[in-house]
Image 1 (cartoon, rainbow over the protein chains, first blue to last red):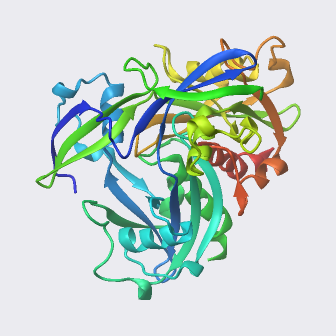
Image 2 (image 1 turned 60 degrees about the vertical axis):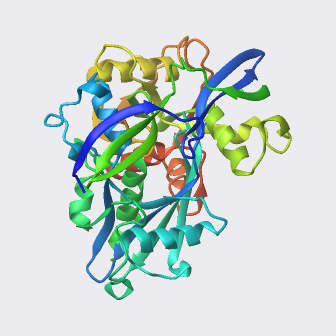
Length: 211
Length: 211
């Protein structure tokens, strides 16, 4: 997973299907304003709990955006990356199973597919429970993300599935409840998005006590 | 705050100081890959609790990115916006007090300035407690956000401050603990980022019981 080499940057092509930036203009209380933003897809994410082994199921992956965020905050230029000082593992994130909504099927079906493709559990949509919808990237994209919760068992596991499809390289990791709780404690520095922390803490407050 | 008119879009200028998109290239396990992303600033956000009135202090503002996220998910084209069906208030978010790190001062000093500028409370940095650091926008920007917690009193209030500086138009709102808890419950649809939900739930779990 971490055999990453030959990092370099280039301009964004005008036809990027993933990042579509533009300037938004409006008038607020008589004053002309603008805001630079981009369109990204709405998405789903799923807190998965394996009840057979009493483990939370998360995914880890190398995130180019996090790698760039780290080196650019240190003032490192693209041509100048010291791969010993900045090994790719610094940008391996821990996240909830998640995916973008890019097909004309219901969002719970999107969630079902991601649970299978990323984590290898094949469960019907009626075992996937919608929790909360919120807006991610309120400053840049404002896309909606829907958080789901699903309990799975070892019997739901499809041995050949998980780890992503196509070019995705995703590691599935399991945490017991007390290990996971530590990630939400004061003083933590996590390479995870806030949606991971919220989903995890929501589980700890609302479901973990009942298990 | 909500008198918003004349919404239209234009191309992103190449010199946008806020959104700098590009394509990131790398080789993973021998395979050439790329990822489209953008540089955004690292940031701080602060859970503020007014101990005099036992209220959480949040901010509300019109977010162009959220407005665009909503209408574009419905397939509405820029020239075709029905302002009755899509009034700007649909894109007023509730957030933690927050700000980007764009000055060479410590991040707790950035947090101190935002508490004053956005919410009107003047407190020293040593009353602002660092909680957790995480990565926002792991798919697009990977910027670091540091979450802080601060307790304020009515005596800390500066009558002339709050509501933002320069062109910012920010409403300060107060929630009692039980009202706020409802925002984290199953079935909620909030126009808030996941960092808001995490910060709020972190407070409810770790600080609210002691108050």
